[in-house]
Length: 208
Image (tube, rainbow, N blue to C red; front, side):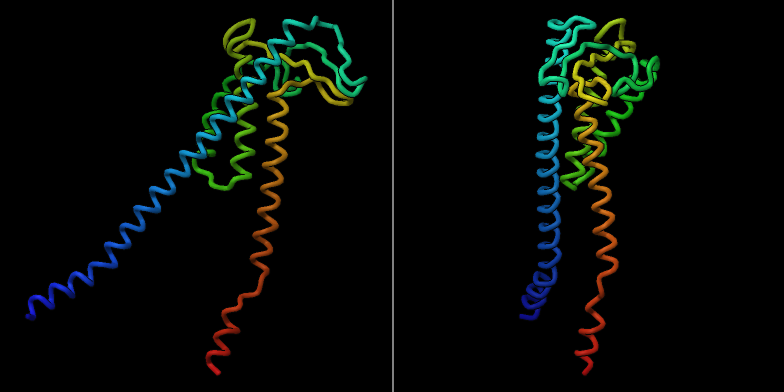
């Protein structure tokens, strides 16, 4: 009888550990499923934005002539075909190869950040930055005059702003969203640090 009792007690003692391991395994599976879903959404967004960027650039090259300005909404929005060997918004002219190599490194780093980040606004911002980096990197690899030396196609012009493309728009929106996310997170952390801790008050009442 005592042997049976000891066996039951041992089963009861092992129960919580067994349940805990199952719970941890379930949490790991849930986290992995969420990560895969996030990466699928990111990949879909990247493919869509990069495709839109490359299609609009190809249409601009086929339909527009250099020096020809097409007014879409008066002087507020115009199409003006240009190419540049620099970065976004025609910055850093003449540094095509360095920018291409930097874009490749940045792409791998952004992919790593997206894989390891759970915050949705941050993931959205990083995804937009990745879209922009890949869009312009495609020009540097596949357009003339050659691989890693290709010039980026720009064709959208608005007042008081350098000529840009869809990839540049993604970089801009992603940068603004990322900055806003960082600022908001800082405010939230300061608010949490400034909030009073209710535990001492409860402990005092319990002691009474």
